[in-house]
Length: 390
Image 1: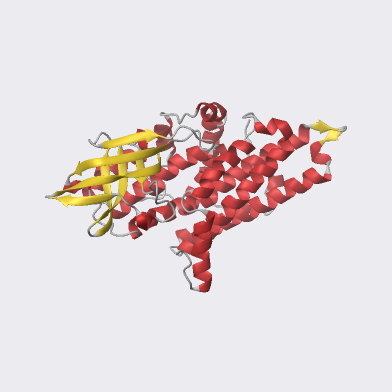
Image 2: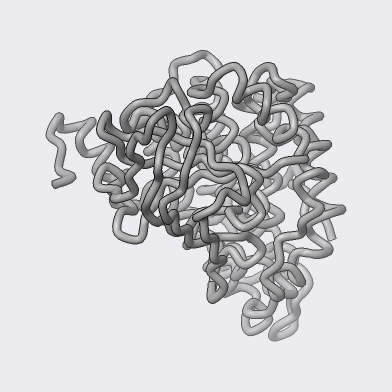
């Protein structure tokens, strides 16, 4: 069943702030979610499956590398990308995560920091979903502090030899190319490592309570030999990976509100038809209060996402603004999903209803691309002028 937003839930008339092109794109992605994700997601989640046919379908939908220009990329606006992220995450965070890893992380790294040859080799087929990319930054001992990464690439003649390990790398087991960040004698650099390169071991992380319809992996690089063409020439230092992380964090600001909205709509619909003590649950004050509190945060969070999107399209979006959006919207989305589950009662713990699945997924979204603590410290440094990370 589709949970399309009805006018009763758009109290602030936020749709009036969107252009006809933006609304048209949102409906297109919403239809895809209704037809391809909703009917299947409970089974994918239960079976811990990411459907291998989805990348090509998402490429055809035009949401891979959506905000990038040229090289076969869609070249859409930041707001359009945000709207797509919101609709996809209303289906499932794991599906939006694939789009984020592919476009905001892997493709952005190649587009921003790659050579002309690298862009032409990878980007058109990644935009089409024919090839899948991943982004290997986080390590077993370096999550929130990537500057302490232990992976190291040393020069060897014209090329490089890479050693190290990575953890929680989305899509790595199906990736055709890995964007791998490693220390070198010159500082942190990025490398493109094609699938099947000798010395690379990829192990999916199976025992997960969250993001079950997605793929995360451990990677080990054991004396991996790379040619000179593997280096991303434009990236030196943490500015390289952080520029990509900010793209992904921006998409999360929107996506989290999609999961929140879907949870709210499932609870509202259930409350309207579930009879208790002779009348619908929706007729009780405590239930109405829960629904109203959910709606308040969804409306505010969506307005925040739209404001950040307009700033991004104007070239004015700053990192601390993205941190504010990511911290607020994911935190509120988790609360909304949990409160929605309470309206569903015992039925809410089944995969027949989305809120608890969304809540579980959002625990991952809350952690990746910067934990609550990291974004709090980014904002804390911004407002006090004092870094408190160490």
